[in-house]
Length: 36
Image 1: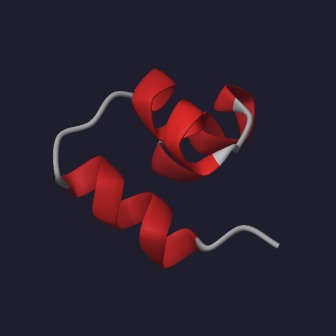
Image 2: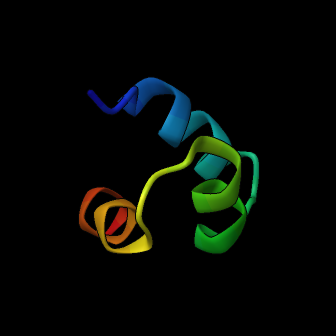
C-alpha cells in the first residue's frame, strides 16, 4: 500500500518525481497520478 502522506510530504518539500520514486520505491506513473 502506498503511504500517500509520505508521498505528499516529499512532494511539498520540493523533491522531483524521480527523487520520490527512488526514495520510496514507488513507480513514477503512480506518483504522477497522485500529484497531478
